[in-house]
Image 1: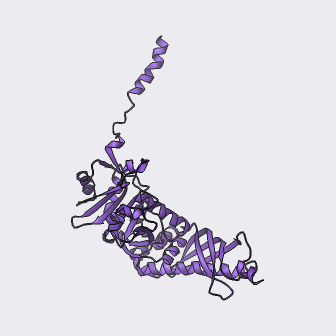
Image 2: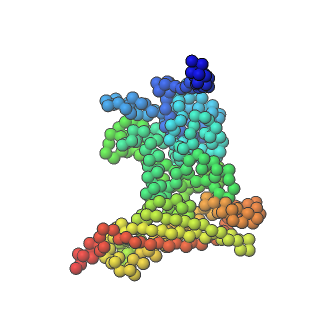
Length: 399
């Protein structure tokens, strides 16, 4: 008996160290937020929070109510605005499932660094949400649009952004930790992808917007916004955005159209299936030179002319055309960044790693030194596969 008590005593003592779920909350006590919108207001911040209506999402017999509701409030600080939501929302808003944070364009232009303090400090906020800019509109308007196919607009926004990055390439997903590290780091500036509101926002708020084959109001992923420190200073075009991602080794897949070698107006479409970019640096006479070496592989996806790609010479010409297209996009991107005086490529960070002594001098005047950076491009493209057919049907039609 004594031996049994001796064995049981440690287990009993362990029970006193166990804690209960003292901070737990039932689902019917909270409102789950899926997206946060931050706009600039006269008092400081205008906050929009998109929350779920769970009954409409899981119900087999949905009513006319929407799957989400957006609440708005204002505050001198972001924390105050979040707390003031209690006068609007019927339940305490729970932020651990936020999928995206949207900055209104005016908010982004005025500076976003102060808002990031609360987003990273609050214990309820995770850091795996995506950050975007409501291009040419406000975050509030963007978060009030109902979307077809996906009942939760925030989910639609995130999935569209991730798909565009994976399959088209002029976008870039940015999470909180990456954005903060870029903003506080030396020799690199931040970027965020824009999201456009196409159509009338008033119509987008109505359920009728998702009851049509062609919704009159939609959310569309745009191109990359360029920051100078924590302020939005401009936008890249689609080609410039792709050029940025080529230089940053962010391209997973995309499509490149190049002219046919038979001098026709038609083109050949190449599906990029892999890329690898390596940046190196040299300094000659205090002028930095960056070399971007890119290895790329692609497949033939579409041939709309009579070019015979089984001919090695013709295929080589297509590969060279793809190389020129990629180089042209990178040149445009670097030119645009220099015009905006924003080193979004991290050339300064590269110099710091490879030439710390020279960088210590250059960093004091990097805005001007960035304009003098020479960039060389080495693009090597191979197209090993032509697809399931070898010749274009147009050539066979001539036989």
